[in-house]
Structures are given as structure tokens and as C-alpha cells.
Image 1 (cartoon, rainbow over the protein chains, first blue to last red):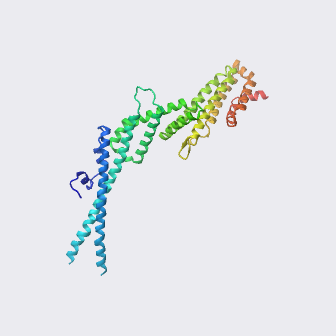
Image 2: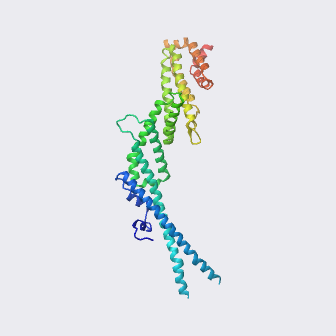
Image 3: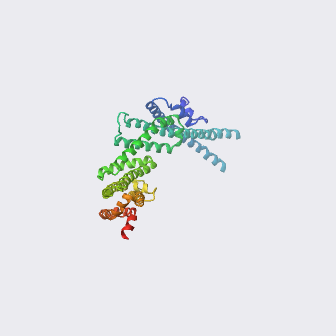
Length: 77
Length: 292
């Protein structure tokens, strides 16, 4: 897990609330065009995180399977 | 041996398991964030389009084309907001809904309704009926309530003007055939509106069915003649009973009145005939006198 990315860190915080976060981030007073382009770059970043975390999850699940097989094997004996 | 095995369990199972849970929780939060953000992005995009399609205040009329675009933007915004109600909790959405979307939606509805009241039924030209149909369909999608009330208004405006014209003839009954003819023209225009509504698809049916599902009658012209005949009957009977020169003139012209109604009924097409027959009842009081 990359710890250098503050935004990614945020999503690991149990207290993190998506609605409250976006409400703070999307200022109602700025020019709509700027908010729009900032939002769309954040969205592509979130897509990137999703890909990254999904593959991490897959490999972790994969690693978990191996010792489980080992355990059940030793259990039989 | 046991402690060794436990450290392996810790390393190979418990740690990765905990990691999985954390990753899953984080993924779910990212997912919630991005789906809300995606909806807000669509909302912002639509809000910006409102500005692009809004005509400056110096121009008096919004062209039909812009009106249709604005109506479509507003129906999309409505769908967007109702599919994700939590969006309304965001200050950004609240602000733009209040300052841009709301006023523009009201203005779009107002101009759409006014345009329709002006055009509706005036033409039997297929192209113009098609254009009116598109405006009607836009209004229906934007607000069913305003659609129903606009059609009701289209009918009622014609009812009012026909009632007035017919009532005036009570004191100068020679004009009655002419006034009746004018009312028939109004009814024919409503028949055009009916055709347009029937030709315009809406959900699984058409706009005429959508309108009549809220009403007792299936036909606008039926409502029209029903109201016109009732109103004329009331005024006619009051003047007739009051007697005097007006009442006498109604009595002495009764044959002409009845004949002109019959003549015009005969001239109508099958559908119009059945509906115009309601006018017979409006002068039933002299009919009784004449047949005596």
C-alpha cells in the first residue's frame, strides 16, 4: 500500500464520510467550470485507486487460499 | 511446535485476512465517493448547459429549439436528482438548484405553456402539428401537472370565447347561426389539438390518453360542447323566461334557431355530429314550445 498518497490514505480511515468529504471539497462559491474540471480529475484518480486496490485485494485473497489448503491438509492427518 | 505454527497462522492467515477487510472497506468508500462524484459531475455539466441555452433578457422570446433543449436539460436534472437524493445534501448542488436550476425551470415552463396556448390547434398543417407535439411532449416530461393544466386551459379559453359570442346573440338572435359557426371553428381547432396529442407518443401510450386518464371524457371536443351547451342553455332560458322583447324575439325565431342547429349538425362529420348534438339540448325549451 502506498503511504505517500494522502488522498488514498483517507479512504482507509474508518471515520471517512464520502458525502461530508465531497461537500467540503466542492465549494459552492467557486466558478463552476473549475469545480467541474477538478472533479473530473479526482474521478479519474479514484478510478485508478479502485484498480490498484482491487488487484491488491485479489493477490491477498490468492495468498490466503494457499495456507488454508495447507491447514486443512495437516488437519486430516 | 505450537508457537511456531501460531506465528505462521498469524503471518499467513490473520494478517492477510485483516488486510483484505481493510482493502474491502476502503474500496467501498472509494466506490461511494466516485459514484456520488459522477452524479455531481453530470449535474454540473447540465447546469452549465442551462447557461449556454438561456437567451439574454434583451431578447423577448426563447426560440422553440432552445426551449426544447432547456426542457430536456431540466427533465434530465430531475431524473438525476431523484435517482440520487443524497446529492441534494451537497452545498454546491443546493446553491445551483436554488439560483440557476429552479428559476430556469420555472421560466422554461412559463414560456412553454404560453407558446402552447398561442399555437395549440391553430394549424392542421402536419409539420406544425408535429412541432406543437414536440413542445407538448417536452412539457409532459417536465411536469405532468402543467401539461394537464395547459390542455385544460387550451380547452377553457375556447369555451369562454364561444360562450361569450353565443350569449351575445341572445339579444340579437339573427346572429346566432354566425356565432354557432364560430364556435364550430373553435371545436375543429380542438380536434386538431386532439389529433396532435394522439400522434405524440408518451410512455406506453400517447399524450391524449395520458390527458384523458385524468378526466371524465376521452375527447376535448366533447368537453368543449358540453360546457358551451350548458352555459348557453342557462343564459338562453333566463332570457326566455324573463320575457319582454328579448324573450319574445327568441320565441318568434325558434324555428330559425332550431333549423340552424340542425343544419350545422348535418354538415359535421360523424364524430363532430354526435358532439354538436349536445347543442340541441341547450334550446330544448323552445323545442318544446314549437312542437306543441
